[in-house]
Image (cartoon, rainbow, N blue to C red; front, top):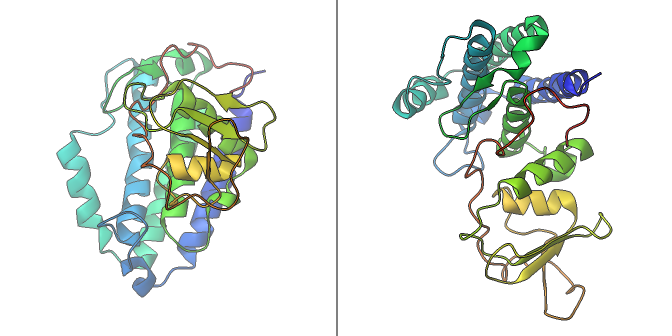
Length: 263
């Protein structure tokens, strides 16, 4: 038994939640701003639909052994999003449903041995095909929050938060960090040390993940003065800018075969 069935089920549930949100949006809602600067909700929905198709390309690469880029180019990716952003809500929903269904079928039908094939996104490092599922879950979970429709970081499932923090730590931008230590309050003894220059910060896992990924201004995250365990209240105005996120689309040195558990 590997982690694949559990991650597939998690992805299906996350996709259903996103589709339910998309189904509730009117044309005016879709045209309204998202949480991402310069993007409407339509941009976010178009990106999520296109991202499913892009991950289908990576699974095709894994299945056939023929290099199939995730996107033709960064410019083509951006142009596709811009072209689709102003579509009406019903069209966005149909595109999301269709792309998600095609990706789910490809995941279901991929031969087991293909999950260990090496693929690569738009940036290194290369990674085994099974990690495509993790990347897709990340896109669905993060961009659901970006829609600004009421689904927030504290709605993320605990499994999602734990895994994303795990991978964020593995991909930490040492040398470009803005904090020296991360303390997770709901994880006894969970302290990330020697991260870079700057203060230590403290917060619950979902709040910390939201701040480190740019999904909040620091709600629930506080500074930890030297020699103290915490400081009361939210530290938003006093917090440094979070360090760069997603400097790598996947951690280095992932196991080739799908592991039993991840993380």
